[in-house]
Amino acid sequence: MVTDSIATPRRGLLVGNYCHDVLHRDGRISAETLGGAASFISVILDALSLPFHTVSKVGPDFAYAAATSLHPPLTMPTSRTTLFHAHFGSGNPDRLLNRVISCDPIRPDDLPVQTRFAFGLAVGVGGEILPETLEKMLEICDTVFVDIQGLIRRFGPSDGRVSHVTLNESGFLHLLPRVAFLKASADEVSFIDVEEARRWCCVVVTHGKDGCEVFSENGAFRAAPFKAYQVDPTGAGDCFLGGFAAGIVWGLSVPDAALLGNFFGSLAVAQVGPLKLDSNLVQMIKDEMQKREVQDIPCLESTNGCPGIWKAHEQDQFHASLVAAKNIITGSTNLS
Image 1 (cartoon, rainbow, N blue to C red):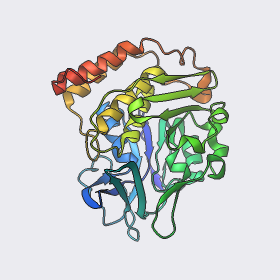
Image 2: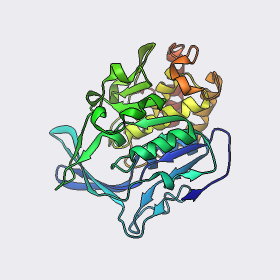
Image 3: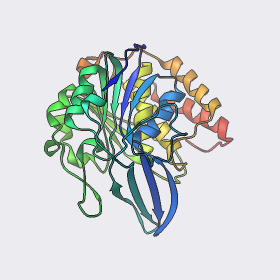
Image 4: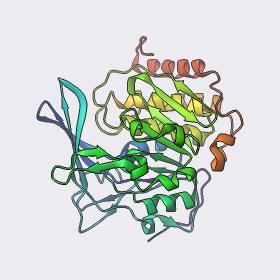
């Protein structure tokens, strides 16, 4: 059991295993890198000055201790680090994903005790988050963001090929009314009854180059995308969620937070591995966020009860400001 009695305003809890990712392109290994949603999201939370505690498990073979030194994982002496192989082909734009090795799951008694967190992110990738672990997060975090991939992924018995079950079949459905934000990709949304889920929480669906949609009991809207040259889509959804959650915690409206998520997702696809952020760009983003901060982190015991949170106001201005900041750093004039 981990004991952590530090209480910091807006402090978060990030839960999900680090991984080894091997990328294959047209049958050949093109890259080996640090993976796992926690590795991508931690970069964004750090950059935007949000303190958080990470719970992640690896084996003694973990190859990226230096890269994760600010948020070190728990090393399980009898396990190995989760390993994914992602296969891309020039003739097939879809990624084929295999979990080759699985580290130990994260259990409730792995989470910190004697503290409370302003927000939590449940971001499993390899089946490491158990229903009882998410339930514990909901008890100790005021606002919880959940990536659906950590709940509905299943893995082939022989090759570890990633498939999905419906949220109703996942063993997590009963916890949905206590979740604030549920994020799913366009490929995953068919495994959710969005009309039912939006009665209980805010559902955010990412559409890659086409931006995202946000659904709540009171309405829905679409947040515009940002142009990007795609090198590797791995981690784009994680960076979206990191940016979106950071925006909410900073006090942005949900529409503005969705735009911020789209922005960080567009930065992610242009790189391989965890996001590398220019410090000047980060400062410009912070400046724009401070201009648009509308409230403290929402009281999301009832997400739909936040007054005015669903009105997509002045999004064009925020979008233009983020594009301008990116263009100043890159020297580009045509990315929008």
